[in-house]
Image (cartoon, rainbow, N blue to C red; front, side):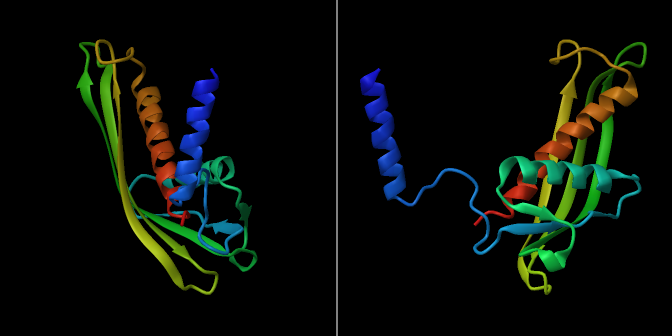
Length: 167
Protein backbone atom coordinates (compact mmCIF):
# COMPACT_ATOMS: atom_id res chain seq x y z
CA UNK A 1 0.00 0.00 0.00
CA UNK A 2 2.77 2.44 0.94
CA UNK A 3 4.68 1.58 -2.20
CA UNK A 4 1.61 2.35 -4.31
CA UNK A 5 1.19 5.73 -2.62
CA UNK A 6 4.88 6.50 -3.08
CA UNK A 7 4.64 5.68 -6.80
CA UNK A 8 1.54 7.84 -7.14
CA UNK A 9 3.26 10.75 -5.37
CA UNK A 10 6.35 10.38 -7.58
CA UNK A 11 4.20 10.35 -10.71
CA UNK A 12 2.39 13.49 -9.54
CA UNK A 13 5.70 15.28 -8.94
CA UNK A 14 7.03 14.27 -12.35
CA UNK A 15 3.82 15.30 -14.08
CA UNK A 16 3.88 18.66 -12.28
CA UNK A 17 7.48 19.24 -13.33
CA UNK A 18 6.68 18.89 -17.02
CA UNK A 19 3.88 21.49 -16.98
CA UNK A 20 0.95 19.06 -16.78
CA UNK A 21 -1.90 20.16 -14.52
CA UNK A 22 -5.08 18.41 -13.60
CA UNK A 23 -8.46 20.08 -13.86
CA UNK A 24 -10.00 22.64 -16.16
CA UNK A 25 -7.80 25.60 -17.14
CA UNK A 26 -9.80 28.34 -18.89
CA UNK A 27 -8.46 30.78 -21.43
CA UNK A 28 -6.22 33.26 -19.61
CA UNK A 29 -8.08 35.94 -17.69
CA UNK A 30 -11.48 34.25 -17.95
CA UNK A 31 -13.73 33.82 -14.93
CA UNK A 32 -17.16 34.33 -16.52
CA UNK A 33 -18.63 33.20 -19.83
CA UNK A 34 -21.82 34.23 -21.63
CA UNK A 35 -23.42 31.36 -23.50
CA UNK A 36 -25.70 32.43 -26.32
CA UNK A 37 -28.40 30.14 -27.66
CA UNK A 38 -26.87 28.33 -30.62
CA UNK A 39 -28.10 29.13 -34.13
CA UNK A 40 -29.64 26.27 -36.06
CA UNK A 41 -29.42 26.21 -39.85
CA UNK A 42 -30.94 22.72 -40.14
CA UNK A 43 -34.56 21.80 -40.79
CA UNK A 44 -34.88 20.22 -37.32
CA UNK A 45 -36.50 22.55 -34.82
CA UNK A 46 -35.33 23.03 -31.23
CA UNK A 47 -31.97 21.27 -31.60
CA UNK A 48 -30.36 24.57 -30.67
CA UNK A 49 -32.22 24.70 -27.36
CA UNK A 50 -31.25 21.16 -26.38
CA UNK A 51 -27.60 21.61 -27.37
CA UNK A 52 -27.33 24.97 -25.59
CA UNK A 53 -28.80 23.40 -22.43
CA UNK A 54 -26.33 20.49 -22.65
CA UNK A 55 -23.42 22.94 -23.02
CA UNK A 56 -24.65 24.98 -20.02
CA UNK A 57 -24.84 21.82 -17.88
CA UNK A 58 -21.34 20.78 -18.95
CA UNK A 59 -19.93 24.27 -18.25
CA UNK A 60 -21.36 24.24 -14.73
CA UNK A 61 -20.32 20.64 -14.09
CA UNK A 62 -16.78 20.80 -15.41
CA UNK A 63 -15.49 24.34 -15.09
CA UNK A 64 -15.16 26.94 -12.38
CA UNK A 65 -16.42 29.61 -14.76
CA UNK A 66 -19.47 31.68 -13.88
CA UNK A 67 -22.23 31.38 -16.47
CA UNK A 68 -23.70 34.85 -17.07
CA UNK A 69 -26.56 36.04 -19.27
CA UNK A 70 -25.06 39.18 -20.77
CA UNK A 71 -21.87 39.40 -22.84
CA UNK A 72 -21.21 42.72 -21.05
CA UNK A 73 -20.79 40.77 -17.77
CA UNK A 74 -18.51 38.13 -19.30
CA UNK A 75 -14.82 37.72 -20.06
CA UNK A 76 -15.70 35.36 -22.93
CA UNK A 77 -18.72 34.83 -25.16
CA UNK A 78 -19.45 31.36 -26.53
CA UNK A 79 -21.49 31.27 -29.74
CA UNK A 80 -22.36 28.34 -31.93
CA UNK A 81 -24.24 27.28 -35.02
CA UNK A 82 -25.59 23.83 -35.81
CA UNK A 83 -24.66 23.37 -39.46
CA UNK A 84 -25.72 19.77 -40.00
CA UNK A 85 -27.87 17.16 -38.33
CA UNK A 86 -28.52 13.68 -39.70
CA UNK A 87 -30.50 11.06 -37.87
CA UNK A 88 -31.51 7.65 -39.09
CA UNK A 89 -32.64 4.21 -38.15
CA UNK A 90 -29.95 1.83 -39.38
CA UNK A 91 -31.60 -1.50 -38.50
CA UNK A 92 -35.31 -2.26 -38.06
CA UNK A 93 -36.89 -5.43 -36.74
CA UNK A 94 -39.75 -7.36 -38.32
CA UNK A 95 -42.31 -5.26 -36.44
CA UNK A 96 -40.68 -1.91 -37.22
CA UNK A 97 -38.92 -1.80 -33.85
CA UNK A 98 -35.68 0.13 -33.87
CA UNK A 99 -32.74 -2.22 -33.48
CA UNK A 100 -30.04 0.31 -34.31
CA UNK A 101 -30.01 4.05 -34.91
CA UNK A 102 -27.44 6.77 -35.43
CA UNK A 103 -27.22 10.55 -35.37
CA UNK A 104 -24.51 12.91 -36.57
CA UNK A 105 -24.11 16.63 -35.96
CA UNK A 106 -21.70 19.33 -37.09
CA UNK A 107 -21.39 22.53 -35.04
CA UNK A 108 -19.32 25.67 -35.61
CA UNK A 109 -18.23 27.19 -32.29
CA UNK A 110 -16.82 30.70 -31.81
CA UNK A 111 -15.17 31.88 -28.63
CA UNK A 112 -14.96 35.68 -28.53
CA UNK A 113 -14.14 38.52 -26.18
CA UNK A 114 -17.18 40.70 -25.36
CA UNK A 115 -16.12 43.30 -27.95
CA UNK A 116 -16.20 40.69 -30.72
CA UNK A 117 -12.47 39.83 -30.88
CA UNK A 118 -12.15 36.21 -31.98
CA UNK A 119 -10.27 34.02 -29.51
CA UNK A 120 -10.79 30.79 -31.46
CA UNK A 121 -13.17 29.07 -33.81
CA UNK A 122 -13.69 25.34 -34.22
CA UNK A 123 -15.85 23.09 -36.34
CA UNK A 124 -16.79 20.00 -34.35
CA UNK A 125 -18.48 16.90 -35.67
CA UNK A 126 -19.71 14.03 -33.56
CA UNK A 127 -21.86 10.95 -33.97
CA UNK A 128 -23.74 8.65 -31.63
CA UNK A 129 -25.05 5.15 -32.27
CA UNK A 130 -27.41 2.83 -30.48
CA UNK A 131 -27.63 -0.92 -31.00
CA UNK A 132 -30.66 -3.03 -30.14
CA UNK A 133 -30.90 -6.80 -29.35
CA UNK A 134 -27.66 -8.57 -30.09
CA UNK A 135 -26.19 -5.10 -30.63
CA UNK A 136 -26.01 -3.97 -27.01
CA UNK A 137 -29.58 -3.16 -25.91
CA UNK A 138 -33.27 -3.84 -26.43
CA UNK A 139 -35.80 -2.47 -28.89
CA UNK A 140 -37.60 0.71 -27.91
CA UNK A 141 -40.33 2.75 -29.50
CA UNK A 142 -38.93 4.65 -32.47
CA UNK A 143 -39.27 8.13 -30.95
CA UNK A 144 -37.85 7.10 -27.56
CA UNK A 145 -34.90 5.39 -29.23
CA UNK A 146 -34.00 8.32 -31.45
CA UNK A 147 -34.35 10.70 -28.50
CA UNK A 148 -31.82 8.58 -26.59
CA UNK A 149 -29.36 8.80 -29.48
CA UNK A 150 -29.88 12.59 -29.65
CA UNK A 151 -29.23 13.02 -25.91
CA UNK A 152 -26.00 11.06 -26.17
CA UNK A 153 -24.94 13.14 -29.17
CA UNK A 154 -25.66 16.42 -27.34
CA UNK A 155 -23.64 15.26 -24.33
CA UNK A 156 -20.66 14.26 -26.50
CA UNK A 157 -20.72 17.57 -28.33
CA UNK A 158 -21.17 19.57 -25.11
CA UNK A 159 -17.98 18.01 -23.71
CA UNK A 160 -16.04 18.96 -26.83
CA UNK A 161 -17.53 22.47 -26.96
CA UNK A 162 -16.49 23.14 -23.35
CA UNK A 163 -12.93 22.07 -24.28
CA UNK A 164 -12.82 25.08 -26.62
CA UNK A 165 -12.74 27.23 -23.47
CA UNK A 166 -9.54 25.58 -22.20
CA UNK A 167 -6.07 27.05 -22.67
